[in-house]
Length: 227
Ligand code: DC
Image (cartoon, rainbow, N blue to C red):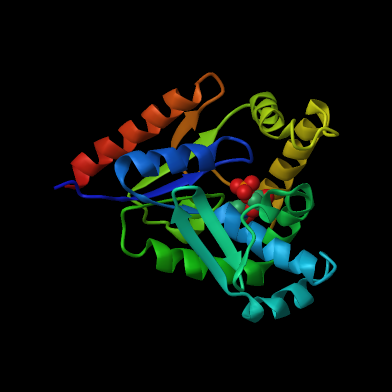
């Protein structure tokens, strides 16, 4: 029997963490937890309540009202806040623009990290985010830092959204990727770091399939060692 492990995948915005993790999890029969979606869901709720993003106290006070539900389905991951399906809404530009600010609030991180640890408890999971290997699961069996050049990441994001959000140029997306990198890497609370025990995978020159294969192999090798 395969001994399933706990996998932490961290890296900057647009490195392909969620699409790659989802595919790898499907192929290997792991549970995939997109922690970025959890920060986005909280951000969606904060925006709904018209709270200023700078008002950390008010954001913290909202948390007990938030019942977050994540469910993997054939259509992908479904995210609900207090019974409302926000799967689509959390990918919109307003949430994307605000999420770094909300993710930097300490109380928000404490609230979500606790839920992430509970979900990962049983093992056989792939969590992707910014602080999985460093904070959420420092004892993960395998830590991967998935990255790619800023140019590659901006181009991928642009290809993803150009039909839906026609007004956004490649240059504007590159700027927003750089801004998000800076905020994620320089915040006080759990900044994005590449921990020393992570395997670095730079996907700049890989296709989606190649990246999936590479990460699958890392997991299979580790499963063998932990058996
Ligand atoms: O991966 P993503 O783009 O959906 O993440 C959205 C935001 O959430 C991103 O700006 C960083 C933040 N985030 C975080 O701070 N910690 C995580 N574990 C996951 C995401």
